[in-house]
Image (cartoon, rainbow over all chains, first blue to last red; front, side, top):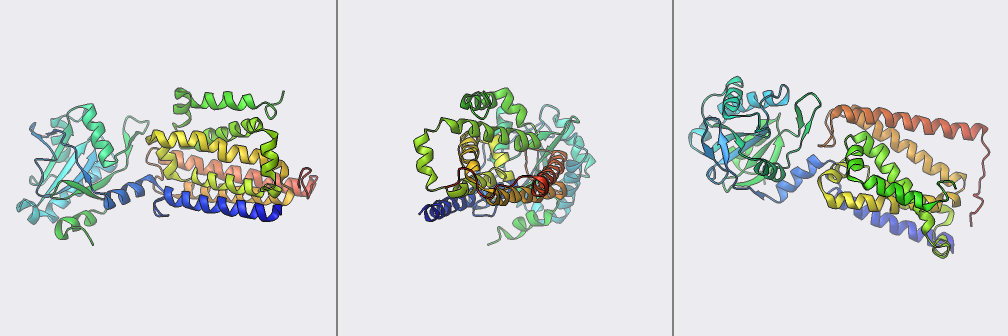
Length: 205
Length: 193
């Protein structure tokens, strides 16, 4: 009898365990939080917070006032010597590749600093200049206070970890915001072609 | 009184691990969370299992021949807490952190404590071989993965964890081999029924 009962108990545990694992991995699709973030954004587009954003020329804008065009959003900090410097030059290249939609007012590139204490408008402008800014269709901005920064990081799922050398390691990516102002996708920062497709052809069906 | 006999040691350990400074310190690196915090939580559950009334353990025994059900339960719970996503989520979501502090002692530590004495050499051996395989598989993955699997932890930390897990896998493997060659092997556990 105890053999059968043990078998039954083990099978029950297995079934419960499989169900738990399926739940914890979005149906065996997401084993890392980065994949989970991307699946969640794709399946449940997120409304963006109406926080003010200060631009490199000192003006103020927001996701609400940028509505009506595709936004490709990257989170950066300008002191970054590794990823972000490459992220910047990738954005400069995207300015060329998306020149048409940018000229038509259908697309805009947006770099958001998650280190606003250091990244003053002057630093943001210098970052764009260093990266080879083509002068049109790329805004670098910073949130104006800590709660706004926290809200932005939460909604976009941005995690920046101190790297022990005074900088940060962060889950760099290109976030895609549709003309209705919703975050609809998160794509690889080093494969801008994917984000570009959204602007040119809309979301893949 | 030995720690294995005194369930209050488990309670004190659990409370100590739950203190915010201790929690933050043990979650500062992937290595500490996975190889120190989670195993200590399981150990707290192992100690606290002694709080269970004798009657319950006897009643459960009919469903836990050779400790197999308990090992299945503990293994499945351990798999869940080995997902990189869960290590991340424990830092980002308080509900996941609470789930970890409850489920690791209850579903990993306590079942192992109850099941280990019931298991004979074969069942223990199968379990340990799976522990070795898991340590080496995960260790290798962490060591060679060029991407960070946890958004909250650094790549160098992940690689260090990989190296230590390969070491742990190798150490258990050597212990098991030593036991096979020189040790005394009880094919049936003393209290197996």
